[in-house]
Every structure is written in C-alpha cells, then in structure tokens.
View 1: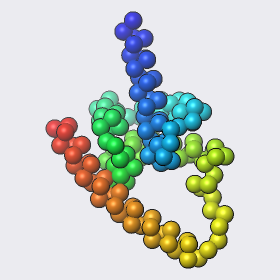
View 2 (view 1 turned 180 degrees about the horizontal axis):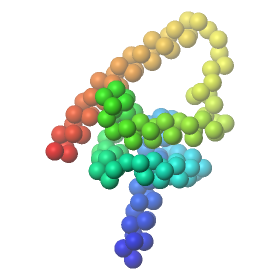
View 3 (view 1 turned 90 degrees about the horizontal axis):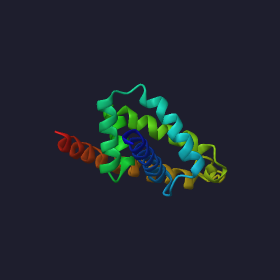
View 4 (view 1 turned 180 degrees about the vertical axis):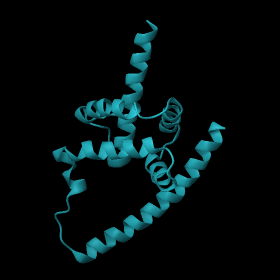
Length: 144
C-alpha cells in the first residue's frame, strides 16, 4: 500500500509540475499530451540528478510562484540546472502543438514593431532576472 500511495503522490506532483511550468511559459494549463510526454521525459532527466538536487528542485516548484523569473536567475547563476532543463523540455514539447505556433513563428513584418518587441523583451528579461535573484535568495534562505 505504501508504494502505491507514493506512486500516486509522485504522479500528482509531476502533473502539477508540468502544469506549473507550462503555465509560466504560456499562461494556461498544459494539454494532456504535453503533460504525458513531459512526465515520461522527466524520468530520464531524474536519473542524472542527485536526490538532494531533485528535492531542492521540487521544493522550488512548490514554493515559488514566478518560476520563469527563478529559471532566468538560475540559468544566469548556473544553479539548479534541472529547472533550466525542464523549461527547455517544456518548450520543445509545446513547440510540437499547432495551437502554440503563434508563440514561435512571427508572420508579421514590421521593423518598428520588431524593434519595440525587442525593447519590451529586454525590459521584461531584466525585471525577471532581478526578481529571480530575489526569489533565489529567499529560496536558499528557507533551505538553510
């Protein structure tokens, strides 16, 4: 009975993880097909990570609301590589869905609009980076 309960809890945690990361990227819950593929691929990533790193990762997933900001800061500081790998994995999987093509393909051509998009993206990234540093500091303070 204990092993079955553990498997149920782990599956629920992984489904929540998939939804959380997908929502951080695309502002909606993950479609079933993406969630399923994400969980399958995650098992491969987990085999290469220590139990301590995996526990820290799941603690962050549960505790931090702005995962995108945390991921940017972790990528910059080279901390929690599993978080960055999982974000990349989710982007790869989401890219396969036709309804997500609007996020990856720009069909409009306008130099001014393009430059404005770049400027807005730079400002957003700097904000996310600063916020991520704050969240990373708070997360490490909670662990100690």
